Image (tube, rainbow, N blue to C red; front, side, top):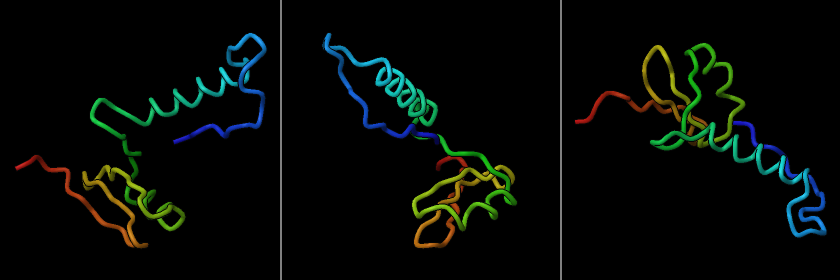
Length: 90
């Protein structure tokens, strides 16, 4: 998920409203957050097993992916990958 970097700019203009730069920043931030959420919570990037193998070593602990072929969610915790089944409950 892309989250825009905050720039050290004037936040509020003389009129008491956000400056145009901060309006754009807030719009980008809100759009990025909305793109990462659904009505049911956070969305996971969808990857193939090959893509997952390639990116997993670079990603920090706590990262999650949805693996297309196996239909599982994969988390990286403690440097190891863990699969969570997406089969229906119970």
